[in-house]
Length: 346
Image 1 (tube, rainbow, N blue to C red):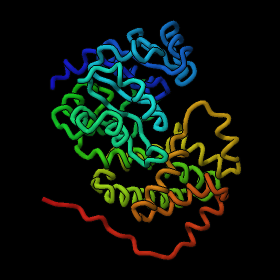
Image 2 (tube, rainbow, N blue to C red; image 1 turned 60 degrees about the horizontal axis):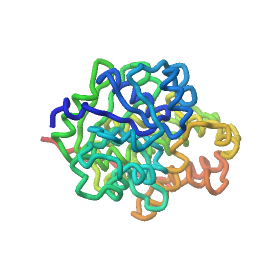
Image 3 (tube, rainbow, N blue to C red; image 1 turned 180 degrees about the horizontal axis):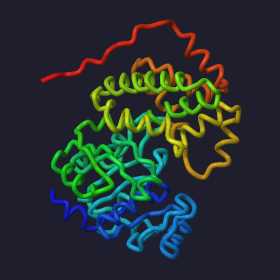
Image 4 (cartoon, rainbow, N blue to C red; image 1 turned 120 degrees about the vertical axis):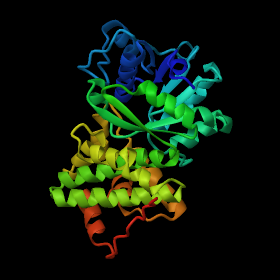
């Protein structure tokens, strides 16, 4: 599939910080992009002032971004749909959009998370909404990519996954430029798991800083967090090596240590003694790790996967355990041997 055909009419579904950043990047690459915003005032601000003051302030947007809050008008004639809505509304928004979407539109999903209740990855949610026959036109983007850095054109590298290798290669060419580099993979499960679970581990990493536990504690937690992410990935049918790449270790490092990380900030404030309710009531943007912690904990239990950090984050968020209590329990666990992940060699 030629990238020229893919880029004929591109729309970004979701005008949060990440969606707006991707719309700006794609507009730089292609010249014009549609952007759907849930809030009409956000669409108006983008069209009239070239500014998303609510979710991405201080970044001037190119005039080639045409925003709307009308789903039907947004979907008309799209060759490529980039999905960037929060994970907990992905199903409902896609169900509303689907009747207006051309049957051959390629989907690039940049939403990360695990759906509450069903415990589906975003890949599974899209298949359940669109049908298994849509699998060949579904692709997924993940990796270390703060919205503000992408919006400012700073160097970024991401993973791009699909079961359709030809489509994945065409999208790789379409979205890559001198400041944005995409690497392809076939491991849709691996990048889906990595993109979701890193937010949970980042809450714990932020809490170590809030508690004043030091750099050693944070490094240990991030490393052991990667190990449990990998265990779940492999159990679900993904590949361990994917979690050593951009959509695993890369995204985990960024989200656990980066100052722009919403999940790390939430964890830090919890470690400092603030309540979850107080933190969330003052936020406009979503810290995906809060919802994902609940889903990831349930998914680990369903499959019998040992995920002690995820479990303790869940207990801290939903069972009123303090951050200090959570970390004492992690340190007091039974002593174990650190396993080595086998690596296939040619």
